Length: 226
Image (cartoon, rainbow, N blue to C red):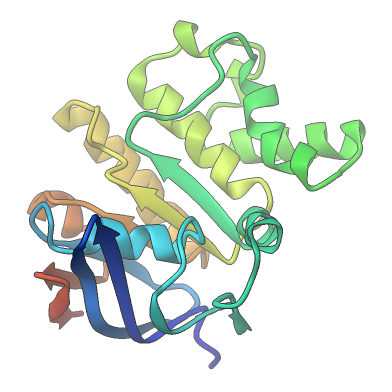
């Protein structure tokens, strides 16, 4: 089986004035299609830097990153933007919804960038909303939704372009414990449908929903358990 994510000996060095800081030090791991992986670690451990690389928001200083078999290391900004939109779905702690835009149009956004026609966009967006249990909220604005419902809209938006991987960055960080549980149960359901999910979290009870936990410390992986 071809890995959907493959990192080989990845390092990421940041230059600050005349100082250099190595945020990732020779990180290697692979993720197979259908896995649910939690990336954990304290602040400054390298997990956020790793997530930015996985999301094609940054490039490694050295090493190789294959996303769904494609080497993204030498890509320019436009190419990275295109592969991000085609291969990845993003879920953020702060939902990142457009406040003045109805739910269904928020979900359509990745398809607008992909150049799909209005009719096909609407059909796919409504299907994604149905997947997350919000088919009755298509015309609501984010302000009319609870935090949990807003995160469901964000998950529908991440699903709508049938990505190879969903990247979730602290997806329950702004939610109470009951709503967090609902969102994690939704992720579990989606994963059982074969969707690959990689999630950054610092909360062990949230990481427990994942089938695999990768732990970072000081820019290195110190644990990888299934």
